[in-house]
Length: 154
Image (cartoon, rainbow, N blue to C red; front, top):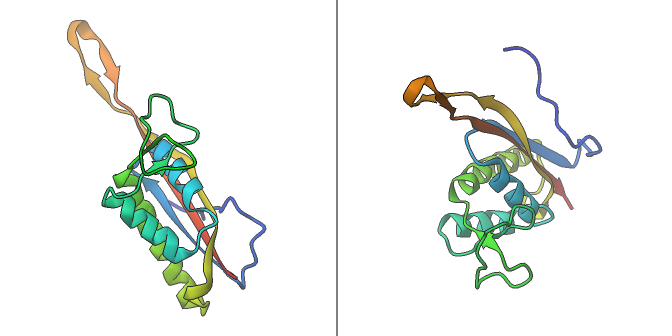
Protein backbone atom coordinates (compact mmCIF):
# COMPACT_ATOMS: atom_id res chain seq x y z
CA UNK A 1 0.00 0.00 0.00
CA UNK A 2 1.67 3.21 -1.11
CA UNK A 3 1.05 6.82 -0.28
CA UNK A 4 1.16 9.00 2.75
CA UNK A 5 -1.58 9.80 5.22
CA UNK A 6 -2.68 13.41 5.35
CA UNK A 7 -3.32 15.21 8.61
CA UNK A 8 -6.52 17.22 8.94
CA UNK A 9 -5.00 20.15 10.91
CA UNK A 10 -2.82 22.09 8.47
CA UNK A 11 -2.11 25.35 10.35
CA UNK A 12 0.29 23.87 12.95
CA UNK A 13 3.80 25.22 13.49
CA UNK A 14 6.14 22.27 12.76
CA UNK A 15 8.85 23.56 15.11
CA UNK A 16 6.63 23.60 18.22
CA UNK A 17 4.23 20.72 17.50
CA UNK A 18 4.39 16.94 17.46
CA UNK A 19 1.75 14.81 15.80
CA UNK A 20 0.69 11.18 15.95
CA UNK A 21 -2.13 9.22 14.41
CA UNK A 22 -3.73 5.83 14.85
CA UNK A 23 -5.10 4.43 11.60
CA UNK A 24 -7.75 1.74 11.09
CA UNK A 25 -8.47 1.30 14.80
CA UNK A 26 -11.20 -1.18 15.71
CA UNK A 27 -13.04 1.12 18.12
CA UNK A 28 -16.35 2.91 18.13
CA UNK A 29 -16.26 6.08 16.05
CA UNK A 30 -18.82 7.81 18.27
CA UNK A 31 -16.85 7.03 21.41
CA UNK A 32 -13.64 8.26 19.76
CA UNK A 33 -15.30 11.57 18.78
CA UNK A 34 -16.48 12.20 22.34
CA UNK A 35 -13.09 11.31 23.87
CA UNK A 36 -11.22 13.56 21.41
CA UNK A 37 -13.58 16.44 22.23
CA UNK A 38 -12.95 15.88 25.94
CA UNK A 39 -9.13 15.81 25.80
CA UNK A 40 -8.68 18.69 23.34
CA UNK A 41 -7.27 21.74 25.11
CA UNK A 42 -5.89 19.81 28.10
CA UNK A 43 -2.28 19.45 29.21
CA UNK A 44 -0.80 16.07 28.25
CA UNK A 45 -0.50 14.93 31.88
CA UNK A 46 -4.14 15.83 32.54
CA UNK A 47 -5.30 14.09 29.35
CA UNK A 48 -3.38 10.92 30.24
CA UNK A 49 -4.77 10.98 33.78
CA UNK A 50 -8.30 11.45 32.42
CA UNK A 51 -7.98 8.51 30.01
CA UNK A 52 -6.54 6.26 32.72
CA UNK A 53 -9.45 7.18 35.00
CA UNK A 54 -11.88 6.31 32.20
CA UNK A 55 -10.14 2.95 31.67
CA UNK A 56 -10.41 2.23 35.43
CA UNK A 57 -14.05 3.44 35.35
CA UNK A 58 -13.46 6.20 37.88
CA UNK A 59 -14.52 9.11 35.66
CA UNK A 60 -17.00 9.06 32.75
CA UNK A 61 -16.63 10.91 29.46
CA UNK A 62 -19.45 13.44 28.90
CA UNK A 63 -21.39 12.50 25.77
CA UNK A 64 -22.47 15.79 24.21
CA UNK A 65 -23.36 14.85 20.64
CA UNK A 66 -24.24 11.15 20.83
CA UNK A 67 -26.26 11.28 24.05
CA UNK A 68 -29.63 9.76 23.17
CA UNK A 69 -30.67 7.20 25.78
CA UNK A 70 -27.39 7.73 27.68
CA UNK A 71 -27.88 7.71 31.43
CA UNK A 72 -26.85 10.62 33.66
CA UNK A 73 -23.72 10.21 35.78
CA UNK A 74 -23.21 11.54 39.29
CA UNK A 75 -19.53 12.37 38.63
CA UNK A 76 -20.35 14.81 35.80
CA UNK A 77 -21.20 18.34 36.86
CA UNK A 78 -21.53 20.52 33.75
CA UNK A 79 -22.98 17.93 31.36
CA UNK A 80 -25.05 15.15 32.94
CA UNK A 81 -25.00 12.31 30.39
CA UNK A 82 -21.88 10.21 29.97
CA UNK A 83 -20.30 6.79 29.58
CA UNK A 84 -17.03 4.94 30.17
CA UNK A 85 -15.72 4.02 26.69
CA UNK A 86 -12.86 1.81 27.93
CA UNK A 87 -11.74 0.22 24.64
CA UNK A 88 -11.61 3.52 22.77
CA UNK A 89 -9.83 5.21 25.70
CA UNK A 90 -7.09 2.55 25.65
CA UNK A 91 -6.42 3.08 21.94
CA UNK A 92 -6.48 6.88 22.17
CA UNK A 93 -4.12 6.74 25.17
CA UNK A 94 -1.66 4.77 23.00
CA UNK A 95 -1.84 7.46 20.30
CA UNK A 96 -1.39 10.20 22.92
CA UNK A 97 1.71 8.51 24.37
CA UNK A 98 3.03 8.09 20.82
CA UNK A 99 2.60 11.82 20.19
CA UNK A 100 4.39 12.57 23.47
CA UNK A 101 7.28 10.31 22.44
CA UNK A 102 7.44 12.11 19.09
CA UNK A 103 7.62 15.45 20.92
CA UNK A 104 10.42 14.18 23.13
CA UNK A 105 12.30 12.95 20.06
CA UNK A 106 11.90 16.41 18.49
CA UNK A 107 13.44 18.00 21.58
CA UNK A 108 10.28 19.64 22.94
CA UNK A 109 9.74 20.09 26.68
CA UNK A 110 7.25 17.36 27.61
CA UNK A 111 6.11 19.18 30.78
CA UNK A 112 4.75 22.11 28.73
CA UNK A 113 2.81 20.15 26.09
CA UNK A 114 -0.87 20.80 25.37
CA UNK A 115 -3.31 18.89 23.16
CA UNK A 116 -4.14 21.42 20.44
CA UNK A 117 -5.75 19.00 17.96
CA UNK A 118 -7.61 15.75 18.60
CA UNK A 119 -9.91 14.36 15.96
CA UNK A 120 -11.53 11.07 15.00
CA UNK A 121 -12.48 10.30 11.40
CA UNK A 122 -14.31 7.39 9.84
CA UNK A 123 -12.03 4.94 8.08
CA UNK A 124 -12.66 1.83 6.04
CA UNK A 125 -15.81 -0.20 6.57
CA UNK A 126 -15.32 -3.96 6.90
CA UNK A 127 -18.35 -5.61 5.31
CA UNK A 128 -19.40 -9.00 6.68
CA UNK A 129 -22.68 -10.86 6.41
CA UNK A 130 -24.42 -13.38 8.67
CA UNK A 131 -26.47 -16.03 6.81
CA UNK A 132 -30.07 -16.25 8.01
CA UNK A 133 -33.01 -18.51 7.35
CA UNK A 134 -34.73 -18.76 3.94
CA UNK A 135 -31.69 -17.63 1.97
CA UNK A 136 -31.45 -14.19 3.51
CA UNK A 137 -28.40 -12.50 5.01
CA UNK A 138 -27.92 -9.79 7.62
CA UNK A 139 -25.14 -7.23 7.22
CA UNK A 140 -22.56 -7.22 10.00
CA UNK A 141 -20.40 -4.20 9.20
CA UNK A 142 -17.55 -2.77 11.24
CA UNK A 143 -16.51 0.88 10.93
CA UNK A 144 -12.77 1.48 11.37
CA UNK A 145 -11.56 4.77 12.86
CA UNK A 146 -8.62 7.13 12.28
CA UNK A 147 -7.52 9.16 15.31
CA UNK A 148 -5.19 12.19 15.07
CA UNK A 149 -3.54 14.00 17.98
CA UNK A 150 -1.28 17.06 17.82
CA UNK A 151 0.65 18.44 20.80
CA UNK A 152 2.09 21.94 21.06
CA UNK A 153 4.69 23.30 23.45
CA UNK A 154 3.33 26.40 25.23
